[in-house]
Picture (cartoon, rainbow, N blue to C red):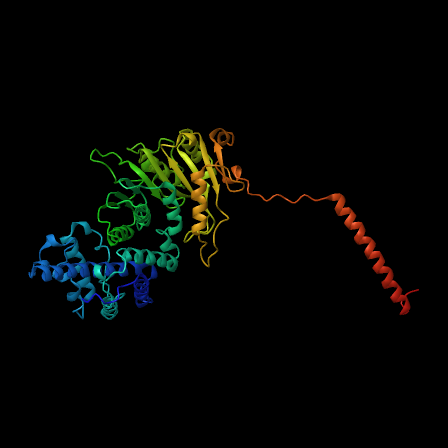
Length: 498
């Protein structure tokens, strides 16, 4: 391939992928697009890198062993899974794609379970004619490394699509998508570093882990020197998380399948919970069927502050996160505002967390930032190793009024994020925006964390000068009297008066 060829840009790749959604439109439900598009994108990427490596070996060594020697490739693509073979077919294409996925998983243990969850062999939804059109469409893009304008372009395009599907599929997409500005804000607050162990216990499509890696790169750290862990209950979403990390070049990760509360899988060799330097998550808001029965006999001792009520699992996730922090660990978690003030069992749990001085900050976000819900959310920063000057205090930030209005969703701007991060770092009162509050004051308020109790954002009413107002009123009455006198004079002249 000549180097004069224009490299693929992110914008080109994004529009190409969106066009593939248009090909599927009308045939299948929009919430299912992602599985098929991601599957084909992944297959094409694996193929193009495989061919690129094999051809390089052929050029440099004058040998063809690059086509069959597994050790030369990060992912080995067997013949029946190669793009050239699949695109040579004219019928039973769905079955051939399924078979290709199976063979890829057999050859590459790192892909186990990732592709098999996508079923292309449904002739009613995906007739051969439609699949031929999709394959031809994907054949137009060259995804080998040397053709990418930015090594992370695939991961970026992937995030774009996840966001688009959240827009397109409303609630269905929103189940696993957190707006990237909210994620960026949490990452800047918890400041992950090279060499750390980072976990997202409700990992979704792995966007939070990827943004943590981006942050470390921006700070000049080496993202290879990181341990990334996560767990995800939804199988399709789990597969997307794995593909997302692999497309970002992050092959060294551990993403487990399953329910974090009912069956945590991130355990050490002794069957104990693994501990982390940083935990970051956006659990489902106020989950009803969260696993109360299993929690009653939790073998990991995660619920020592108390059992959350049956119909709201928020504090189950918070307590899981606290239980998985090491002695200097920090967590950032998105929560609905209800966790700040709801009473009963949740009030007792909140009291326990505060009495152990684990809560560092409460940040109120603007309403309508999240897909599928207008509920205003907050961020809790939990810290097992608060700085001496921060001990015995909690910072409350009311950031609910700083945002840009959007058509469907409101948006946090860079300046809004910077304002929050700066306030968190300065740790001092700012009128009508943030306040450092002692645990004594919080205790006096019965451990209620409602932000409005601590940060007064009401605008002062203007003081009225009563004497001045009366003088003005008398003056106006005098003017009215004079005008009426003139008016009655005219009426009299016209014969209307006495």
